[in-house]
Image (cartoon, rainbow over all chains, first blue to last red; front, side):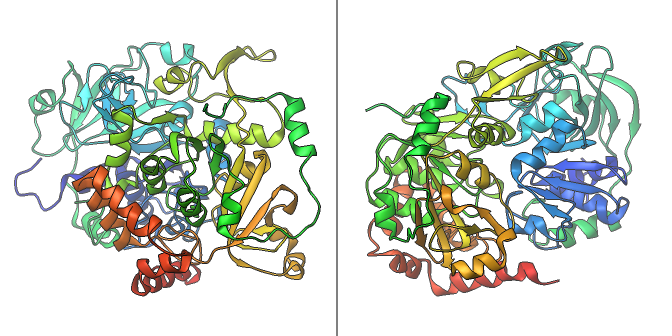
Amino acid sequence: MIEGANHTSSELLAIMSARILRDGQVVFAGVGVPLLAATLAQRLHAPGLTILFEGGVLGPFVVPGELPPSTNEQRCTRKANMILPITDVLLLLQRGYVDVGFMGGAQIDKYGNLNSSYIGDPSNPKIRLPGTGGGNDISSLTQMIVTMKHERRRFVEKVDFVTSPGFLDGGTSRAEAGLPAGGMFKVVTDLAILGFDPVTREMVVEALHPGVTLNEVRDNTSFDIKANGIETTESPTDRELSVLQEFDPDRIYTA
Amino acid sequence: MGHASTLPKTYQKLRDETAVRDRSLREKVMTLEEAASFVSDGEHVAIGGCTMSRTPIAMLWALIRSGRRKLTVSRSIVSTEGDLLYASGVSDHIITSWFSQGIVWGISQVMRHFTENHVAKFEEWSHMSMGLRYRAGAMGIPFMPTRSMLGSGVRDVVTESVKEMICPYTDDKLLLLPALNPDTALIHVQRADKYGNAQLDGLQFMDLDIAMAAKRVILTTERIISNDQIRRTPDQTKIPFLTVDAVVEAPFGAAPHECYGNYEPFFSHLGAYAEATRRDPVAGVEEYLNRYYREPKNWADYLSLLGVTELLDASRRGRSIVND
């Protein structure tokens, strides 16, 4: 990240991921940076973005300064088009109504599998993490954008546990496991934007944030990662930062 | 004493258990303590609401005070109430999709303590799978096919409870989720009549399916309204009286969690709880249980401990949902 830049790494994550969302898309957003990024995209370039929350909310507009503690509180329902049971909002994924699933991750591997359940051996874990929530459903059933900090301990050769399936063992293994739809699309970190090779399904570097080198990305990734015609992203604009700060004045999600 | 099985029961048993229930339009208002006596040790209890929303805290408070043991507890997502159920010994087996206070407070150190030391079990299913299991239970069928959880570790750790099948129509690979039919469902609502017709504002979560799936439903409600009032807006009735066995009036019955349109989470209280359990998970949760669960004389006494200032603040925020 740029030395002395006027933004935190969480703000960078929110802004870079917001830019990937397109107007008119239906986005299933998790709490934290995804919620913030989807809301930011709605305000900036995608007013027709439909947000879904797993608490059972279809098409809300979160109010600035009232970020919810999860996607299951009344704050998530502001200006929503519909409130529906949890099972039914998740079934929209299975039915195929959702363009993008969008969530954070604790640990990811080179095929985009996510772990938010156990650090260490699942039968005797070093750390028991909170678990999947809707993460497994979202990543099983639609195309995914994942946003997370770029650290060696988070970017691993193989996750300790597949909570949310990416491309499993690469190649065609995802479809063979019974997941013909969806898969990892982008991983947005505080260093780079990563995609996946269409054949091997291995993670590749697609773009670097301003001031970041490819070596820096490799130093912070504990598996070999290829680069694919690297571009450089644009720095966060004042407008993006000010809207973000308006939504999260207490820096609950962007500390 | 064994734990309740959470695999499908026979259809005959499901029907027999329902047939013997008094499903007539009868009055069933009682106290928290009376309703708590409906629950036996070792049962499977499903909790309505989700994370910090419409958690039936008053009923859980009564269960903890009544000293129930070894309940298997299921819920869509578990927040602070899971810590309290583990630490009080009421439950040593929680089935859910996510377990921690809430993302802004980080991982529950109490959940970590109990699970990492193998004192209690956190059985993890995906969120939609929890919902489909309750729905199968509500529909009176033994399983629900899904396209989720396939290929994942989440599927592997519950491998003894699930089956895979090839669809006889399309040859697709499907996962079969076993129906969940809880012994008791605990559900908190904004209003209900004395017969148990429950009207529910805002987020419904999995509550309708849980009520239909359970062998017994204990309803707590912010207020009891007349049956005439229910009959003026029957389209707003979400849980039918014939599934309900107990109605308890419990104002602020989800505090310090939220009840849609009435009050939002009590953020200062919850922040203090997170801080105390982060410092020392075991002592922190024990002190909390003593102060808020064991020592108060009654529910009003508990609410006094939460304090008028927080109660007013949470109510002001809660009611603001109707503001433009």
